[in-house]
Length: 544
Image (cartoon, rainbow, N blue to C red; front, side, top):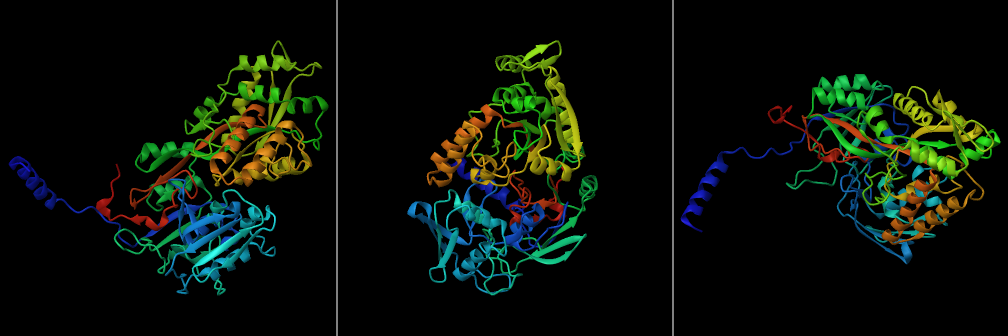
């Protein structure tokens, strides 16, 4: 080292010696946030609503965890796992030295007890649904204290990801004993839910400090989103999930460091036509709605960019298919959303036998093309989208009437009476894997919304989707599964059974007083890394 380099190094070291050490997370403090509904169950195996799933994530220990930031599976209570017999058998080696919150040791016996509860028909756990779809379900057998073998009657693609939803329970029967970072300390119906630190949680940080840092998390029931935002601005709450665009923009102007637009989420908004033969539709409407050319022309006429810009104030992305670009592996990047071109739409309709007479589109029989769109009343974004779609379709001679209705009546129409023309609704996804969409894409599925629970596929393209979805479900090779699901997405774009409109952006707020906040698009967006969140000392907080 030269003399000049030695002097420079000495000056740097001297300067560094007077700099304050980087702030380290300090244990303590209570995090506060609002939830819009009561958890329907605190039993993690019965969690089916969003508040219950949030409690499960914060209190439950799982064998394998989906990292919400990287979208990769990571070891948790299982340190490693392997598959054999074409995916029908899995072996998990368990982490040693782990105890439940009540101090009892975690072992293979607890894992098998949990799976017995999952598959118990008397419990009817939502976690059992994927396993009941395969012959023989799933069985668990211990291999000593620190390993288990899971056996399936037939392959189930992506089975490991399902374990993120199954919180291990104590075989001792203590329902309050958990393996996650927090435990339920208090639940006052209509008021709040208080979680406190699990002092026996097995994780430590890089310095050897036991996690979680927080003493607790207080979740207060607050259905009014305006009031929730007001409390956040007053410093009474530290986190807000799923902000409406208008509220987000208001916060962004007042506290730009707190408001975070995470980009496209997995949640989509879509329009579909009723193709069910059980519905009381006139024959000419049924002919329109079952025509792929008609559906695609309608899709081509809708200006999705306007929906994203006007309705969502720029906090949405034009939609193209069942998987959003937020799903890094499974999204078919070759697909592009239609640009919203009335000339292209009219040319397609002309090829299908429709003609424009003045400002009225007519079919071969001379019937004017008109239909109604139902959506849930009170949802301002959907009502605004429906109004813009009404304007777009008027340009190609289609008259659309809007029919907002209360949500129970809407569900009655689309699932029982099938007395409707078209419906505008959204889908919320938490599962990245296409296996989570089986009930939508199989023609026999209850969520195959345009024509559910078919005894046999009504069309050739639906039969092809059935074949592709079943093939990917039994395929152990992830790349081959992606090829199959890419083709499913292509068929959906071509046939437009769902006309995907936009993917809503994930809009959240995080207080500058909260350290390690790293919101992501996957639920729970702001709390996925709750064991590492901490409250900053006042001197550390910057409002900029």
